[in-house]
Amino acid sequence: MSSKKKEKKIEKYTLVKKIGKGAFGIVYKAKITSSGKIVAIKKVYQDPRYRNRELEIMKKLKHRNIVKMYNYFHTTGETEEGVYLNLVLQYVPKTISSLNRYYVKKSENIPILLVKVYFYQLCRSVAYLHRLTICHRDLKPQNLLINPSTAELRLCDFGSAKILQKDKPNVAYICSRYYRAPELLLGATYYGKYIDLWSLGCIFGELLKGKPLFPGENTLDQLKLIMSLCGKPTHQDFLAMKSQYSGNKFPDFEKKNIQQYIGNNVPKLAIDLLSKFLVFNPKKRIHPLLALTHPFFDELRDPQTILPNNRKLPKLFDFDILELKTIHRDMRKKLIPSHLGRKKKKNLTLK
Image (cartoon, rainbow, N blue to C red):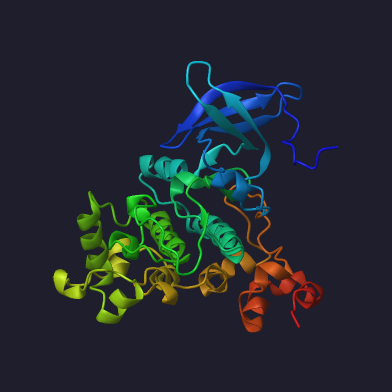
């Protein structure tokens, strides 16, 4: 028998409709012909000169807040030249982006409890990726799949994801502009996974405000919007961002009141947590698991809390030892609600 690893068995699929299109591929809603199960199929061009990084990364991932990959196969285009990789993925009906549009049309903000539930799960997914040394590099509302009935969230689209290696450069032109970290805007190529943490802050602010925090029209405009809210970076900040520019190239900005900018009706605890993500120095941005211990999320740890549709909260606290390994023991204890009992905490105590 050949030792060469084979692809999984190829099922037959019936395409239902196109549900997404990006620079690197098309996503279809489909069903498995034999069972009728609904799936999503992402079709991307497979350059024969390279291995597909997204496929290699998806094979490593197994977390409740990351979209599942069921299968993959290659096809040749009927009218297109070349070979195409097809990723068969878990189908999730909505996105955070569509949820935001729904509430904007109603002239309302997303209920703060839903903000907590969704952002909590997003932080968990990013913490998991970073533990595997994977940087997503394109966190944005369109890549956050949700089931509105259960309030479950799953991170998707790993087409830009990469295992970053220390002291090796990467492209700076990465991540959608509204969610792009300032070090990327400043042209840094030696950056770390901390760029994802800035994106988390931008997404969190958008959930709270109802629209993008920094809707820049170009790179310079993006930087101006960021500095108008966060102030001008210090000399030490520029050094920490490994930027080729210095602060002398930028004018001083009068810092806006972040509470007023986001909304006076937004809880102060939310503003406090947001400010811990939107930090110029990449290494001073809050770790996503540490963020989950913030008092802003205390409502989720209350056993009486239920979703607005009167359903139970999704599973939020089923951490494993490896998931918690990157934070201090005292912080681990804060992650597990007291009503889950001592046994759960004891099992998660690392020696």
